[in-house]
Length: 197
Figure 1 (cartoon, rainbow, N blue to C red):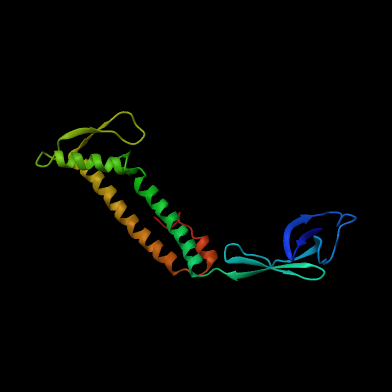
Figure 2: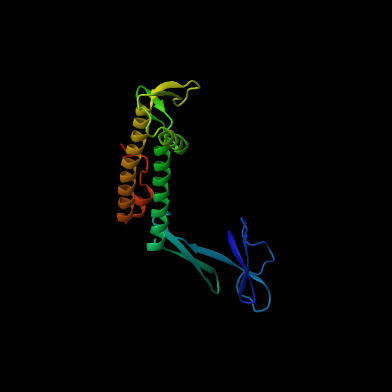
């Protein structure tokens, strides 16, 4: 059983005494000595996703100590924190998808920020050159380059840019959908991984 040790009208300790108060303990209010009172807890069920527990309100009575918790729905700020977590999941998914390799011209190509930087560099270096000229470019997962034309490299860059634009539009739609949600469970369970294709 759980007891509160009371001294000078204040709880100084909470003790678990499975066999009850030991012999010689002062149980019940006493003016000058520390004494024990059994604790009675009232704690409603909590939906941790949608609700917040508050308390306890503690009352020291003549024969027991009561501790009462209450539960309230999450407020706007707490729902916003859930929305921010959902938005971060969407951002993470977006970042993974724009950096994923891309299939084009019979190969899978790097499409991360470094690949885009290299493609832009080649584009700048080849301004005014014959776009049918070729060079070696290494596909994703390969150690050996393949021969591609500058026009094909431009097509790879354009495909990466088009995919990123399409993903950005979907990301903004997902963020708008999250902003419109008002149910805590719907916000917490928002699936950031689907709906990109």
